[in-house]
Length: 254
Image (cartoon, rainbow, N blue to C red; front, side):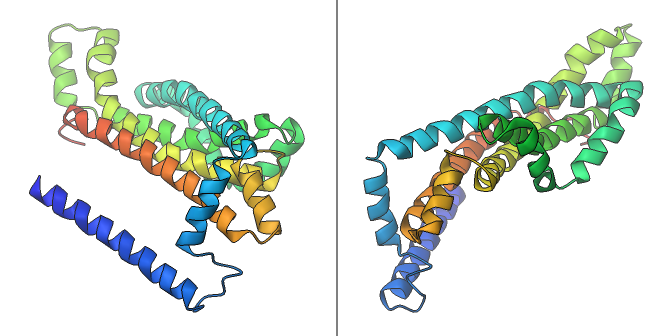
């Protein structure tokens, strides 16, 4: 606990020092204030923006797109990853598509996705799904490949069926890996929301960033960036806590 507290205070001190240096650089115009706003101006802009209806409407749109795409990635990615890692025949069927899409830059697919689904929320949901899907499905595959073979042999010795082995040994062992994949998918999903809205949208945090950037409102731009950053930190931290809770479920040979 002492080490954790020490690390926490060091992290807080480093962030505060960075903000002080940033503010000093802005006040002394070591950096062009037209392009990089100061922390105080960003805080003032944040106070004003949270009172605007449009800000919360943009938050609502981005939140809906992220949650919808991310939930789809979980609901589809986990079963595919688990089954492809467990069954070699199923893996042979889906692996070429997973491998091919994984190495394909998702941003390169944005024009096609926009044409197919329009500039509304549907296209952002699709890109969030694609970005978050692969960390989740590949984590599930890895979980199946790192199962404790001694446990499986012992279960078969006691005449356990394949379904019983799958339910009592394989599935519990996937939990730590799945949580790690979900945590990685959160970051990818948030990136996807912003990129999709920057590319083509009529609402959302990314749309707000574009609008503020065109008007050189850098303080308001940084507020949008901070919203995405803080959201990501909170969600990944919560998943990290849950992941540590289940870390003991990992097989010894993983």
